[in-house]
Length: 231
Image (tube, rainbow, N blue to C red):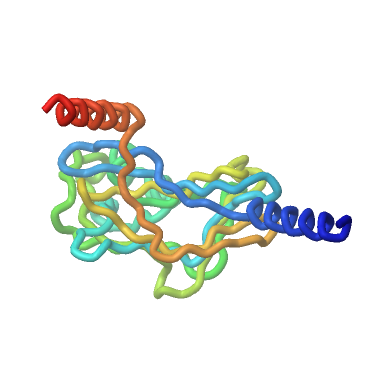
C-alpha cells in the first residue's frame, strides 16, 4: 500500500514538474487603428521556475487568402523595421507616430538591452495597400503588407539581457498589425535562461476582443436566448 502511494505521488510530482515547465503563447486584446487595421501583441507566459528571454527562428506569415502583416519602412532608404531597435536606429528617418501601424519585435538596440545570434531578423513589404501615414523628417514611410522572419531563412535568435529588466515569467514578444478580420501564423521557438525552450508551429495571431466587448457579446446572447424563450 505504501509503495503504491509512493508511486502515485511520484507520478503526480512528475506531472506537476512537466506542467510547470510549459510555455503558453497568447494574443493580447486587439487595438483598432482605424482604416481597416488592428494591432495585437504576442505574449509568452511560463510558470515559476524558468525565465523567458527571447525567440529563435521566427517566421510569421499570412493566413491563406489574407494580406499578411502591415509594415512600415523608412522613407527614401526603405530600411526594414522588424525590431524596435531598427526603428530607433533609423532616426531622423523614423517617426514614432508610425509605430502603432508597424509590425515588429520588441527587442531594442540600446547597449545591454538585447543580444542577437545568427541571422538577423528581417521582414518583407509589398509597398501596396498600406496605411497613408503623415510625413516626418524626410517624407512619408513606405507601407504595405508582408511577412517576418530572418535573413535568408537562416537560423537566428534575439533575446533580452538580464540588465534590460524585461526577462521574466511573462514576456511581450512583439506587435503585429493586420487587416480587420484577418490573421497570421507564427512558427518560432521561445527561449528561456534555463534552456527549457519550447517550439510552436502555426500559432494563430489574431485579434482578441476587449473584456468590455466580450461582456456586451454575453449580454447580447442572453438577450437573444430570452427572446427565443418568450416566443
